[in-house]
Amino acid sequence: MRIARIVHTAAVAVTLLALSACASLPVTGDVRPGLAADQNSGGSDLAFVPQGPSDGMDPKEIVRGFIDAASSPKDSWSIARQFLTSDEAQKWKPDAGVTIDTGSTERRFDVPEVTKQTTSTSVRLTLQQTATVDETGAYSGQPTGRAAELPFALTKNKNGQWRIAQAPDGIVLDADSFAAADVFAPYALQYFDPSWTYLVPDVRWFPKRENTASRIVQSLVAGKPSPWLASGVRTAFTGDVALGRNTVTPESQVAEVVLNDALPTRDPVMLSRMRTQLERSLSGIGVLQVKITIAGRDTNAGAASPASTAVDPRPLVLTDKGFGYLAAGELATIGGVSAQLQAFPQQITAISAASGAQRIAVQGADGIVSAISDGKTDQIDGRAGLIAPSLDPFGYIWTVPAQAPASIEAWPASGGNARPVGGPQDAAQVTSFAVSRDGSRLAMAVVAGGQFRVEVFAITRDDRGAPSALGAPNIISWPSGAADVAWLDDSTVGILGVDGSNVVLREQQVGGPAKTVDAPDAAQTVAPGSPTANVRVLGGGVLYQRSGPNWQQEGSGVKVLAVQLGGQATG
Image 1 (cartoon, rainbow, N blue to C red):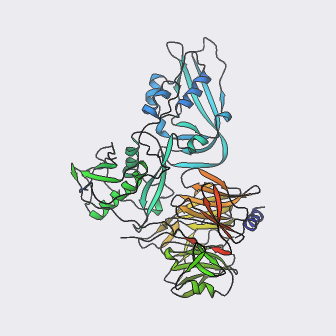
Image 2: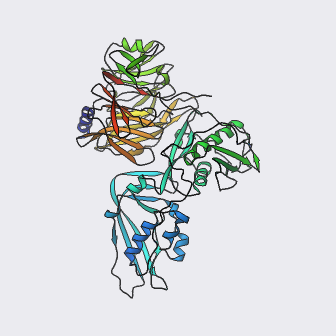
Image 3: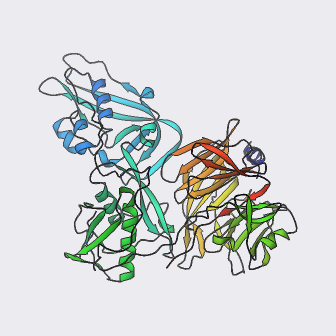
């Protein structure tokens, strides 16, 4: 779809290791990938040391100093606690969350007039809030900076120095500092999809401290998935599973997790899933292996083998020469599929392909969506006004009319009737949608209330992957325009649209802030690459790939850039 046309149409439409379990794991065995070059182990406190209070600071200076000092979690926020009375220093809970604002220059401190005789007063901080992080580490953005107020009560101590007697729990960070992950960093808690085939990330933000491993394990074992995601995932940590010891100390990239001895089952399959969830959740801090113990004994559980979601590093394209993988200017066609596309009776406008491109969803210029596999072409949905379809890893083809966002249908690979799954009730139009490569989430760009927004839904499925409903929406972005969306990796949605007169690509983390980069002016569609940094866009027949901060031309004469799914289960 062309960005200008879609945006215009939309505008018109609106005018540890410490778990206690039941079995024993060797510390030898399969190797897990370590940190990428751009990852931080997060294994130690920050080096930044803020200034504590000095004599003679007035109430405004005390509150300002406290806000600045709270940006360092070193020694359990020991510097920030110096700005508090002794009682409040014990009560204040910095882990309760984060208020993220536009920056210190827009903060306003309102203070009543005080005299030398004044012994108590208040300070009201007004800021422009852009996002929050709650006590579970879940991030929630705001459409625009909106005013928020934080009250502080102050009193003089016996030395005549002002101290904060009552402070809101949590800390305040400006958006730039938060995005830089200098204080808080994102960690992906890993759950399974309903079929136990894929891992699904649930991004949480925790302070970068020495006990981060314990926080991750505690959140995974004793906590729950984010409410919006819960209906689309499963976890091995259910029932009576609990930590037998809360401290997790990774050593030599191996973490010991102690579980209690009240596990309802010692099923080796379930234990292997526990180990896999723990290892993948802790991989962001450099843990390669998890050793689960119970009652002082190692478990012998192995590790599960979740399916990969990585896409083929070659772009999958339709050109004048045919359909296939493009590499070094040569096109590698695909048996049972390429010939069918060559014989397609009309111009093709969109393609979504399964792993290996053995099954694809195709939309023609007339809007009709068809399925191609095994040398056969089957028309599946001829409703008027359909947008580009999306294919999921379980073989279902998802379709929806642009003017009926609540009428999403999923068509099974085996044929038969579509499965209605619903959709947003308050949206007037949908411009693009895409199922995640693990099949657990659906991203949609819609117009509602006169504004664009991108939201993500959990997909409810049975244990065979059949979808039945969508969960509550999780709004992740409010772009000024959104013509095409695609899952760039398991936790990032690419949003191709316009910002003023510029075409931009917004790389929106699900559960975190976004990064916006300029895109080629003619870009119309976006698709993931491998590695994930190599995003591709297509515009005016030219295929571009992002390489670092720049876009490089990768091919020309391209009619359609297909959206690929990831790999299949390995065992």
